[in-house]
Each structure stands twice: as structure tokens, then as C-alpha cells.
Image (cartoon, rainbow, N blue to C red):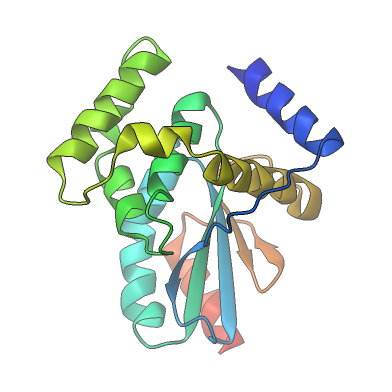
Length: 192
């Protein structure tokens, strides 16, 4: 799987993507907020799921709902299952984070099996039980979303030297401990 992702990234570097369809980024919060958070994440990453389950609700309550920050979720898939899940999270192309949060909340239900086919079947079953009205097969075949995801990953490496997930960028600067909400909150309060 790593070879496949590396070959896709290599081809993007030497053969840039030309896409007619614009894929909207997934963003929570006030787009005009003074503080901009960017989170590079992989949908199969347990630490990223922990961020969504434990850190995000506190951020939402303390900062997002008050219009103080926005969070943009950037794709940094670490494997093919995460790559495919990212396609599904972007499938509606409405910038809404509901599908993304749903996939993290239910990560244990779909991130299992011995092959990518198992993971794809699990995520398809999960999405079909939801009320999102998403056609998983169409999502997985969407090349413009695929290109967007790979561009996020390449830009994360080039611009911010992202090596692991989640990586949190606050107003253009890397924040070193995204799993410690007390430190994150204190840092954000200094920026307000």
C-alpha cells in the first residue's frame, strides 16, 4: 500500500493535476475568524479519531461556536483505506464536516479486515446505514476528489513538513501537542 501511495505522490509531483471540478475544503467554524486551524489527518489514524472524539467537542464549545476559530481538515491518508474514506468524506462536496465526524466516530466499525476490499465493504455498509444518501461507488470513482486529497497530502509535506497525524497548524505555525486540550486552549486564548 505504501508503494501505491508513494507512486501516486510521485506522479503528482512530475505530472501536476489539471482538474475542472473544484473540491470544497471541509471546514468548521467562522471562515472570517482571526484564528485559523488546519488539521492534517488520516481517517484510519486512531489519534485522529481521538482528536475528533475528545478535542474537537471542547474546541467547538469554547471557540468554534463563539466564532473565534475555524478548523480546516486536510487530508493526509496513511493508507489506501484512509484514502478511500477521505473520498467519501468529500463526496457531497459541500464543505460540511458531518460525514467526516461520522467516519471518525465509527472508525472501529469500518477499519478492520484483512484487505482493502474488507475495509471498503465495511465503510460502504456503514454509510448505507446512515442518512447521508451517499453513493459510495460513485465517491470512490471521483477523480477530482482523489486529486484534491493527494494535493492536500503533498502540500502538507512540502509546506509544513507533516510526517504524522494529526498535525495541527495554527495561523501557519505547527502546534506540537494536538492531543493535549489544556495546552491547546491556553495557546489559543493567547491569540484571541
